[in-house]
Image (cartoon, rainbow, N blue to C red; front, side, top):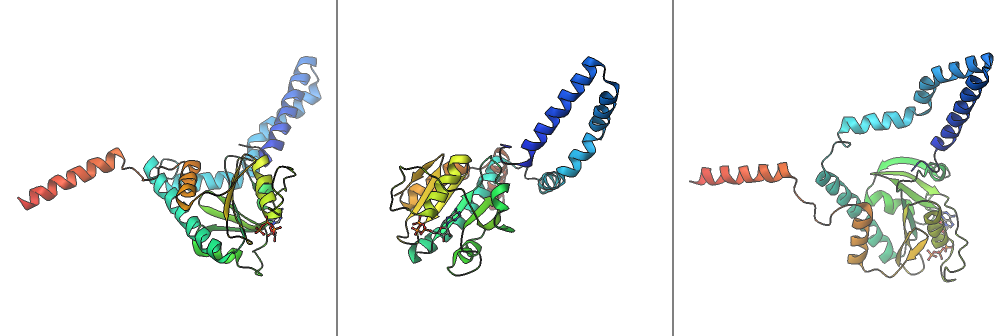
Amino acid sequence: MIRGTKATQLLRGIAIIVVLKVISWYFNFKTLNFISDQVINWAVVVLVIIFQPEIRRGLEQIGRGSVFTPANVKDVAIKKRIDEIDTALQYMATRRIGALITLQGTTGLEEYTETGIQLDALITNGLLINIFIPNTPLHDGAVIIQDDRVAAAAAFLPLSDNPDIPKMFGTRHRAAVGISEVTDALTIVVSEETGAISFTKDGKLITGMTHDEYRKFLFDEMGAKTAPKKSFWQKLLSQSQNKSDKGDQE
Ligand SMILES: Nc1ncnc2c1ncn2[C@@H]1O[C@H](COP(=O)(O)OP(=O)(O)OP(=O)(O)O)[C@@H](O)[C@H]1O
């Protein structure tokens, strides 16, 4: 999950400090012991400064209630996300507008969003279509989606050197396979040449799915149920509403 993020370097730093602390304690190195104690004492402040953006985002999520959001509310949000992406895919596929969209999984994609133009915008089909309109400043490269936000456009993804990718696929498809080899992201490609919609995941290129098949695939991959179910509380509420409606009629 933390692969590809600054947390990796940080963990390495913490490991070095812990090793220094143990050595200084074991051999009774007073100066080294004093320095490592100071570093450890200030570590909390340093961590808060380094992770300020992540902490802010987490607090915002708690504020919006998304951490404690019931599963079915999350399903509705995921369905909305898929609908927006799907509308854009259908529009671009029928007009043969090439597109490359990477949906972040658990692996951080910061090192790739940094290569593009940062957006941090809500996912809408209009925005996605606009980004990929040919000969506009953002159309070249990949869109990276993190949760419900379009994090960046025109991002550069690593190219796969897998010799098994058929020659008919060019660099757009190779980049889609490439990112799926080094992260757990799901990537969608619309071919400019054919209008075909393909997907990459775990190093595999998946082609030829029907509209219904790929929608189901997206729902499965993004962890939503096809038809959002009512929660216990919603069922209870609608039952009591039904009863009171009947009561009113009588
Ligand atoms: N490493 C990369 N990262 C992100 N986008 C890339 C990368 N390499 C190429 N692209 C995108 O792919 C486009 C070139 O696509 P190309 O025609 O080579 O691929 P293709 O797989 O044959 O796709 P298509 O079927 O759409 O032609 C570039 O203009 C760029 O937008």
